[in-house]
Length: 274
Image: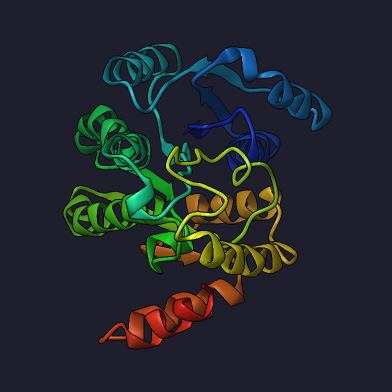
């Protein structure tokens, strides 16, 4: 039975992914920073007639990641797939954000995956097999207003894994990214807001215009379950590619960016959002 480790399972995509893999017969280790927030996951697993090993793992803490992976390997005999989902949103444009805001974003959204890779790659290399699937975002390809720290971290995640991909492939290890667009749930409302933001500040009017665009986008958002289904397919396809989008609309947007060698088409689009 395939053993899958999923991070960030207290809500949203992580919760739906843990349930999706469990109901399809995988042995799932569903992790989160605080087991006190595991109630929704446990209820969803029960409703699906499934079960998972629910454990603590904080991707922003070295010891938490290494000790969790070591204990999982000892208890289950090895990890086959990692779904690196845990993520942190930070709202704000650069002038409003502190250096600590950027550090916090990178600790979770980039270094969280690095810590996981450090923990699992030696065993995967030794057995010439393993799959690492990271939840990225359109924000990892397209810079969006008032998401400077989040986009920076997701761009960095994509650069990290794109660099690692061919090297890991030589060892029989698959690396893939999944890029959702807007997703229903509380991820946006749980974002950290900058202390320097003010209702009548220099960015207030641009923020209001962008908020209207963002709200319109979320009216056609995908569900967490839709994203989980894509993650399942990526983890189980015979020969996964590197980059997956979760909808045709997202593919068009990513395609626009990848063909825009000067950046003018993308920045021309995003200027209209503010």
